[in-house]
Amino acid sequence: MLNNIFKNKFPFAYNYFSTLLEFVEKKERKFPQAIIFEGADTKMQYLFALELARILNCQKDKQDDCDCINCKWIKTHSHPAINNVSQIHFKGEDDESKTIISAKQAKEIEKSLMLSSDYHRFFIFFSSREKEYKQNELEYFEKLNYSADINFSIEPLNYNTFHPTMPNALLKSIEEPPENTTFVFLTKSREDILPTIVSRCLVFKLSGLKDNLKFDEIIPLIQNYPNIDYANAFDISLNFQNYMKETNKPLDNLLNEFLEYLVSLMKQNIDNNAFYQKINNDISITNEMIKYSKANINDKIVLDTLFLRISRGY
Ligand SMILES: [Zn+2]
Image (cartoon, rainbow, N blue to C red):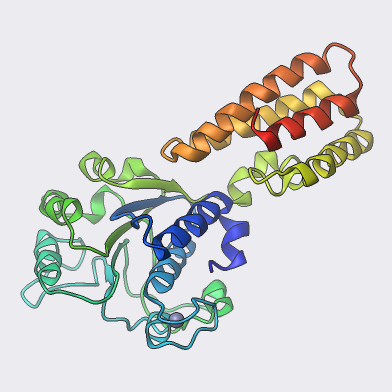
């Protein structure tokens, strides 16, 4: 359902939402009513939000090239239930504010929620001004067959984006929205958004390889983490062994780097209980194996054991 572009860009959010969307389709779980995306690439966050909205509203097979009316509308930025909210979007008739998201906009949202809707409604909050794009600036929109014909910028929210009274005016809508309504806030960091809003949202750090430059040697060795199964545990072990041969890096150094990587992932996923537990568990396994690596046990045995245990979870 979700395009592989996101698997590379935001591996954790990709896994989380892919699974969640399947449950939502089977009506076994609800889609969250308020989400914060934080990270460096706001345009990509926006596209990710649109794709989630598209999959939730699709009337056919949810594929990239679906031609149902909902998919078509979303890809041409004209869906009646997918709303941008910014300094220049979703303004009521009597709202003359141009440089902030105003409290009147919160009222406008409240009013629109009183009308019933057959769609899964989205309100995507970001900072925006009029903008003309250069060629290729919206390359990912084009890759996913979205119209790149837009004339507004997509920038992260911060404290200055909102009128001081706006977030409080919005709380009621966020807390008790009608069924099938989702608020998404795009930002660099949750610290740029009022805590009263943050506490009502699921926060996802949308970071990909680019944000993990420090670990650019480890990541290719364990591409599928956290999805390691019995079959690829040995391949990953072999990747590590080959890497050690190439670089002459001792095993305990390499394992300490892996550990550091796991800790950084854990920090990014503090609000994501399932991943948090999984990574926490893998950290204990890795710590234990670091002890073995210092005890003159054969490197291959340590690495095989490490990844087999990670694949099993104990
Ligand atoms: Zn569709």
